[in-house]
Length: 100
Image (cartoon, rainbow, N blue to C red; front, top):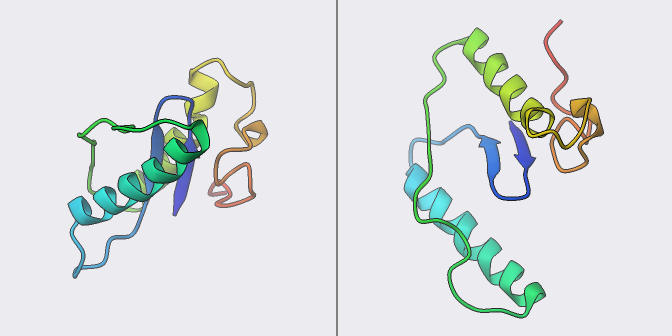
């Protein structure tokens, strides 16, 4: 639903289906991406931290606040001034637009 890749972490907002656990999803993402990143960096071993942080979306307002938080992460980190300028996010690719 929304994502932002930062230099040292990633934020994602997904819709989880009932039949797949979040732990399974995260394990799959981390495993596949670590293999590809390690290949490109010509290295081996663990790439991601073992843990992750999650939260359940309570309502529509919380949903849009989470999207805003995700997209403004590079601004808070001092990497850019406008979240639309970060090319490594769903907003940088034009979706989702902020609620009017």
